[in-house]
Length: 352
Image (cartoon, rainbow, N blue to C red; front, side, top):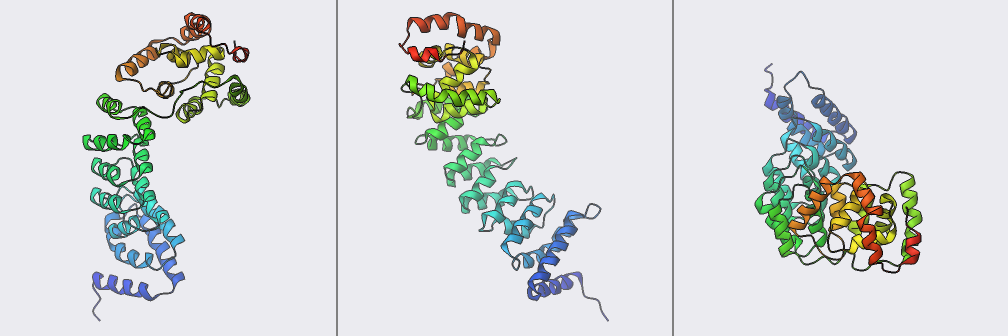
């Protein structure tokens, strides 16, 4: 009796899978995946190619919940069955597609680019979170993606933007202050892009246009003190206050962290010269990114490139002890008293 060729055997296996009961399909699928994940001493590429056709048949027959698990396993394979992987990555259900789109290193740039152009928002966000991610794919995501996709790209520190990508992002920033802030706060944003943002973008609507009343500080203080007591009045919290325009929380937080009265913090927040505010942030032990967020969200004005560079130089060269002394007892305190706003109740709430 003549033996069947390997190709004929695979065809027979695929045809058998197409008609076998659902529970048996699930068991066969599990067995193949186990073989792929444990094939350290075998040729993974050969196994992946051999199993590909059978896996395609199997994933068409199993339930969606099983496909999610399959996708998570396939995403971690160094060498994945190519057709099966592309089928999962292109799946209409984000729960199935996203694990492969986010983590699989076997997907080609062409695959990712075509999926990015045609898929939904969740799939695009998954691609935007990949590390690394090809510049061509980034350009497609910016062109075709929603605001959340652009924010995901900006937040991905492994993403490297091409000139074309920056041009497309700046275009979107014209009508979106949130994107502008996110791109401006990204550490590796080039100065030329910052200059383009400053010249092209309208003034932000958010930010500190009017200082709160004493009652607002009184209402904010218990929560701020409680956060400080448990160690959660940190950069992340203060950064959030600045970005959201929560002025009472922000001013109170700087007062508590730096140990200076409310009216001094108000003075440096509204002073045209940013030096005092940089000192207050330094005295509060905040990092540069949080300091930049505060500077960028005060008085409805945006820092110029020169102002940003000067502020960073001040921040990096100031000693912590010098900042604390100056903010509490030095020239800033004296200037604040001379130009006091009459918030007597606010003064009582300061921490000395």
